[in-house]
Amino acid sequence: MSIEENFIKLKNELPEKVTLISVSKTRSIAEIQNVYDLGERNFGENKVQELMEKQEVLPKDIRWHLIGHLQRNKVKYLVGRVYLIHSLDSVRLLQEIEKQFSSKELIANVLIQINIGREESKTGIMMEDLDELINACEQCKNVKVKGIMATIPKGDTESCNYYFTKTKEVFDTLKTKSYKNITMEILSMGMSGDYKEALKVGSNMIRIGEGVFGKRDYNKLK
Image (cartoon, rainbow, N blue to C red; front, side, top):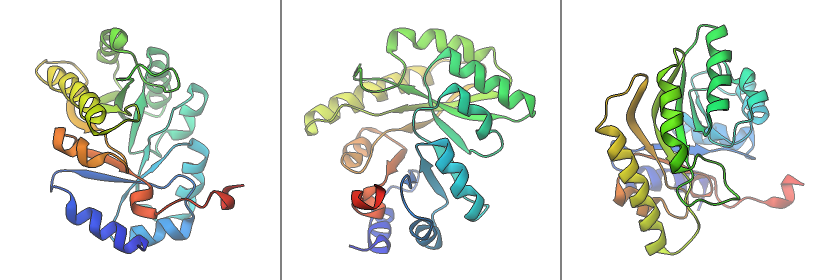
């Protein structure tokens, strides 16, 4: 199917209160403009440099989401540029975000990324370290936590449901508590291969790349 067919089909499938992030990493300016022209405004990038380069030439009302691992030395480049950071995963990263955004008197909206599957190959905070990070978030003035994000281990439908449910339980537990600078508004989980399972469990933000843009041509990326 074409990008237009993919996008329209996906949008028609989604419940009204679910936000689609069209993951535009490695995609061309023309492809992103195509999806923008169909009405999309939320685009997700993995790398700060790529986000910055695309932001310079694409429409100014795009809401850019940094969904990949964020290195502390790259935070300064995101100030005033990013709508939502999905990958807060440590106190040290939090401190750098607070420092850089406070220097410009701006607010950083973030999601706490949880490594729900305890995978060594993935970033995200481990559950036993979550309370420490939450306590540190409450001390901030320029960082506002809007929810949590998770990338689950690859597996069958049963495995997906297990990890999505575990993440939703964390979200629901945090939602019952009252914190400073923290609100549980966004549960970001679900990608092209598993978003339907994520929606059933209660995700209200999904991150879709190939499901919108089609398969990547890796020869073009070399």
